[in-house]
Each structure stands twice: as structure tokens, then as C-alpha cells.
Image (cartoon, rainbow over all chains, first blue to last red; front, top):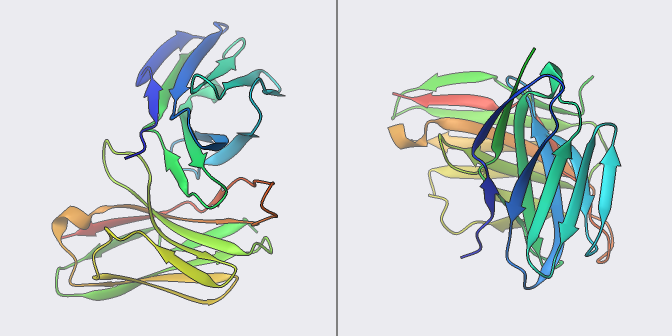
Length: 112
Length: 116
């Protein structure tokens, strides 16, 4: 059984704080790692798709790194804003024919 | 118009009812998915239609029946559900590329299903 673990489960920060959270996944048969942001009452929205070990992607104040050899990815948010409040999901794809296996997500709350 | 549209947004049904969830994508994608989100569990893949081929998760009970009449439309037919089937059902689509490329999922807003 493939397991994707995300930590922490939830996180409360003040506006302006920088924060990061972790996604752990199997280190064998890696194909891709996805990050999604899911705001309440909306649909999950893709942030990044990462495929190469050592990859680093950035979108505004949000960035992500990938270590496929040890099986983890970090998501960083610089200078958190209330609109960053959402659940952040990661999903692992093992093999070109594999389906995405999702973690339970990290719920981020940013207080103004 | 949003890329992936799901109807209805909310559905309450009895255990003996038959109902259907509908999903439509306007993105020209060639793969569509049904996911289930239960409380405190990760998103769980139920069914995939990719390049007109159906792939299913063998743990999905037969009271859930998908239908994909074309690449833009996806249905989930529900029959004699149980209260534990109450969950958020999300539809998604993606563009399946070559073997060396990956593409993200585009999700609808989901149908919140309550089985009484």
C-alpha cells in the first residue's frame, strides 16, 4: 500500500509569517509529485507538478522543493496572507501508468 | 464558464433512490476522473476514463456506476447507497500527454452527497 503523509495536519500563523510544510512519499518508482491548494467552498487548484530530483518551483510567494531519493517535498509560503488560508494537498504518482495517491492535506489558517 | 462543472452541488437521497451526478469539462482534456472525499480521509480515486478506456479502483462497490459518453461528459450513477457513502464527490479532468510528461488535474467544485 502506497502512503503519502503530510505534516503538520493543521497550522495557524499570523499574517506576514513565513511557513512551510512537508509531504513524504515512497522513494521508489517515483514519477511525479503534485501540489494543490484547496480553499473552502472552491475546487482544488493545481500549484505545481514536479518530476525531477532537486526540482524547485516558484509561484509568487509560494515555492516547493523535491527530494525523490529520500521521498519528501517541502512547500514554502513567504509572508503569509489571509488569502493563503486553505488546505494544501500533495499527491504522488508512482510510475507512468500509476494513479495519483493523495495525502490528507495540511490546513493552513492565516490570521490578520 | 468554469473549466469543470459539476451538478448538483448538493444531493440528499434515501437508500432506495437512484440518482446521477453529472460532470462536464470545457478544457478539451482527454481524461476524466471521479474522486471521493470522506471526512478525515485523503482524496480517493474511484474511476478514471483515459483515452476512452475505463480504469477502476477495485474497492469501489457496484452501487456506484460510471458512464462516460464522450470526452467532455462524465456521470456517476448511484443506486441503493448506504449512509457511509455520504461524502464529497469530486470530478476532475486532465490532458494525458506522452509517457514522459505529466499534467495536473483540474477539479470541479464537487457534489456534497448525503444518504439518509
